[in-house]
Image 1: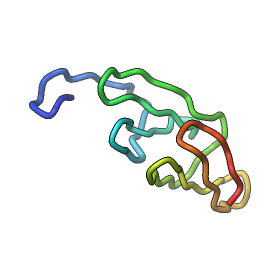
Image 2: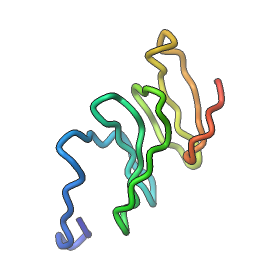
Image 3: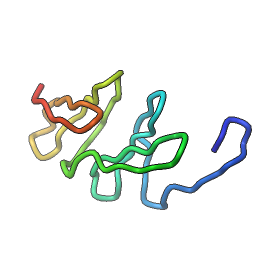
Length: 85
């Protein structure tokens, strides 16, 4: 939705918004895969097939817990390049 309440667009019934930055909303699907959607044009992009838990977006980084690795902390570029943390 735009700031004036117009241009409302429903993303999907199965999406939960986890965080946001200036340009994107970051969300997980029902299987905990991470996606982002551009706030201006609504274009969606799957960032990774890896499962996510408790993510935080900070500038160009996504910090998250990896449930398949005993919830260790990881970080990843917002474009999807994984780096063990």
